[in-house]
Length: 284
Ligand code: NAD
Image (cartoon, rainbow, N blue to C red; front, side):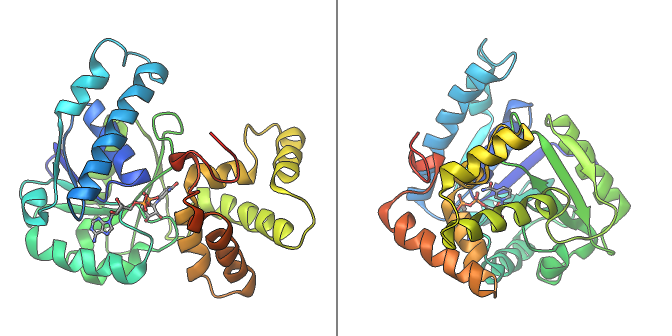
């Protein structure tokens, strides 16, 4: 399989913007797609913010490299144009099964035969989406962690139908774009990272809703007792409360539903979306 040169990222929100910028920073030609002009204007702001972050935090980014990355990023709201020459498409659209399936059906009709598709979904299995891609042998999950310039892990997870060539090409792409690839041997909801992280976040939400302790106390307990740099509510703020809401509201259990309502009424309806909006459980 030919190596990956041209990357297209679908969705330029919290993660999509980071994936696109990180790849551009490492020399890939990147096209970022989002639904309309408003979303693309928001993407430009995100990319400029990322350039500033890289300048101050990423070794070697200060001497013009962070700005150079911006020149390798092209934005469009035309899906056909976005994928016309893509070797790899990474999908980072909202965590809603029906929406993702619809995106893959449109994509399948427009992308070249050779193009590999990868989902950044945090909670869905690639098997949940593979039929909509029309190319299950060239489809897999490539899952990033938030703040990818620093927490640079990339979990690569195929289905039983993913070809070894596609898998290897995506592992190589991850490495060449500055990530540490983690090859997952068996399809597992939540990969390695979220299999560990989600139970922690759910437990924290339960402690809060049951009135056992407030977010600051829960976070402090976790930080001091384990030596971790952040507690669960600090992690919620980094992930973004909209994503936390989407995941909770799609889960069937009463606890998750109650947490989704809590997030909506106390935070999301007031524009408090976490670090990205300047306020969530904490102010930034
Ligand atoms: P987000 O809400 O910040 O961004 C989603 C983006 O998708 C928005 O820019 C939106 O305009 C765009 N979009 C909506 N409909 C679209 C469509 N039909 N086609 C293309 N773009 C569309 O969400 P996010 O937090 O970046 O999450 C995106 C994906 O990444 C989800 O699958 C999520 O599970 C996954 N993920 C998120 C994190 C995280 O920490 N936030 C970490 C790893 C993986």
